[in-house]
Each structure stands twice: as C-alpha cells, then as structure tokens.
Length: 148
Image (cartoon, rainbow, N blue to C red; front, side):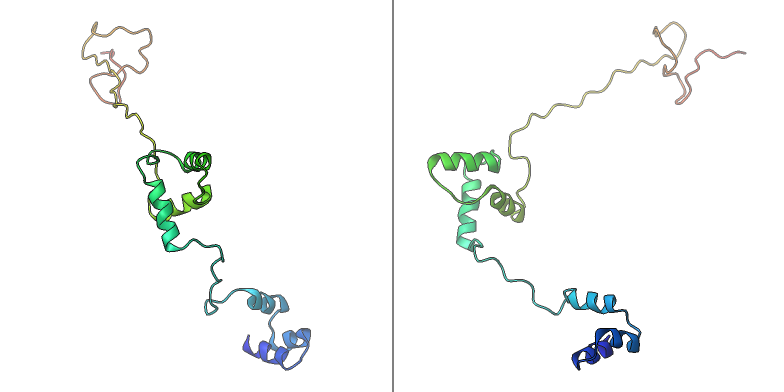
C-alpha cells in the first residue's frame, strides 16, 4: 500500500500504480477514505452544554417536582412556566450518561400468584371435563388408570 501511495504521490496515474503494485484502485481508495485511528476525532459541537449547564439540567430533572415524570412531561411543564433548559433528547442524553434511565413513574407491583393445581393420587378425587393433562402421582405421566 505504501508503494502505491508513493507512486501516486509522485504523479503516476492511479491505473498504472495499481497495475505495478498489484493493488486494486478501489482497495487503495477505500483505505484512503477510511478514518484511521491515528487521526484525531471530530471536534465537539459548538453548542455543547457546559458542565454547569448539565448539572443544572440534572438538578431540574431530579427535583422533587419532576422526579417521577418523563422528560417529555418535564419539557412541557417547563415551557408552560417559560423556562427552557434543553430539548427532550438532551434530557434523555443527560439521564443516560448519569445512569438514571429507568421508569420514572411509580408502578404498581402485583404479587405473583400461584396457579391452582389439582393433584389426584387416587380415583374419584378430582373431577374434570377434560382429563387429558390431569396431573397424577408421577410427574410427566397423565395416565391414572392402568390396565393390569
């Protein structure tokens, strides 16, 4: 690849450099366009929130008034008050970075209920209109009456 770059840098046509080095032009071009790890990453956007602004947004999101609300509800309530701290996406991004993305509402916790199970270990103990899957004394065996 270095030989290809030297040839093209010296003014050799890409087609001739590819033929001499045996490297396809598409491969060389792909390597040139692909970002290398040695290149510095992109600069942050100019409108990035400062640390103080992020802390202010987080303080608003964690305030007792908004603790149990979703960012969309907080955004609407703040706009009604004439306050703008950031977009809904910004609120979600800050919560995600602070590891607070979870259900913010109070949810009812229903107790787990055990399904009733009828077990027969002898004849005449359980009556059912369909006994094809009636639990018996042996697990996995649904046959209560055995021919002797």
